[in-house]
Image (cartoon, rainbow, N blue to C red):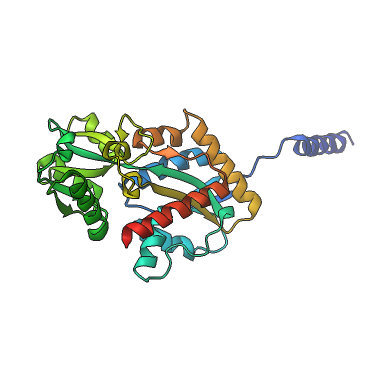
Length: 304
């Protein structure tokens, strides 16, 4: 009898413990498509953002290999909550101007959860003077990655404003353009600020003027320098974080969570933003969509 009583007491105690013990919090699942080249600037940021997200989500990283391929993969995923970061305004403007299927169709502000602005700066090789770009009669080789049409617009506008004879030299990637500038293959470039800051730190380039109309990252405003109203002098690239296969509550919480990372100087994402010279936009979801439309319209004009 005593043995039976003891066994019953032990079982009862165990059940009481199981009922009273706090349940382990189950993190919501979130796929993150790493849409960029494996060693590129976009994915270096994605990796830091994932470190922060893993505090609150059960994250599965999905290699995208490139922005284009990653975006196609994102749209093919069914069922599970899935996130991606792309330069959506530029890509949608590009596909529209080329009469291709829309890069990211059916956009809705309620599924935009992150916005980042970044700019380019006018740079020359270390030891040279950026202001030589604006000297009348100058003839410099200007490297750009904007594509033939938009790149020619930048050079043509500079030449008209300052009576220069600069020549446009096209490149396919910012990495190759930075190398060309450092080695003297080109004389100046419009270089994204992540690259500009990196190579300024190693004393390989000098950069003074940025497309950011307010200046920033230690650079002066290019628009203020040239004193011209053409929108290209203040053109902004705009990265957007999108989420799909979720309801409104999930999307709002993810947006709120990412904004908290922006505001925390010790978060991995915040530190990477600073290192890249990027600007995390503390916009509402409707504000992200409004900024998207502005950059989309500017890009359409640039691509005409």
